[in-house]
Amino acid sequence: MDFIGKVVLISGATGGIGEQLAKQLSKEGVKLALFARREEKLKKIADEIKKNKTECIYKKCDVKKVNDIKEAVEFTMKKFGGIDVALLTAGVLVPNPIQTFNSSIIKSSLVTQSQILMGI
Image 1 (cartoon, rainbow, N blue to C red):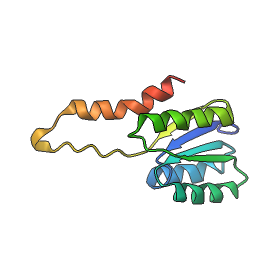
Image 2 (image 1 turned 120 degrees about the horizontal axis):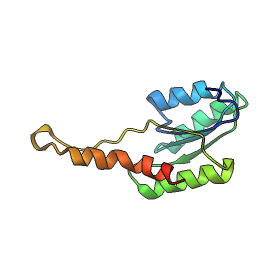
Image 3 (image 1 turned 90 degrees about the horizontal axis):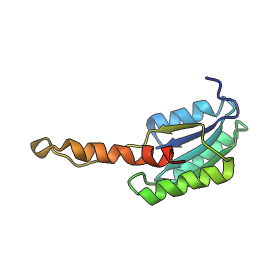
């Protein structure tokens, strides 16, 4: 896929896969929208990415909070006018011990980000 000029939203952008994807994609001519809970680290990563002459915005966002996700999407839409690719790498801890395992808890927690983004 040619990423030049594409708007890429990344949740979980302050660590692991999300951070590495942001850094690699910054070399591909994309416009990045980074989201995670740790705002100080988001700023540091965004500043580093901007050195590659990549347009990069960021916003604190806890993916367990529906309102945070909505605000992050609206923030991106306002700045870039759309989202071409969403990489949802944020991890969510859902306490669900094996002794009382309930698969519906997992399903409901995974759907939130996707549903909001698909509603754009």
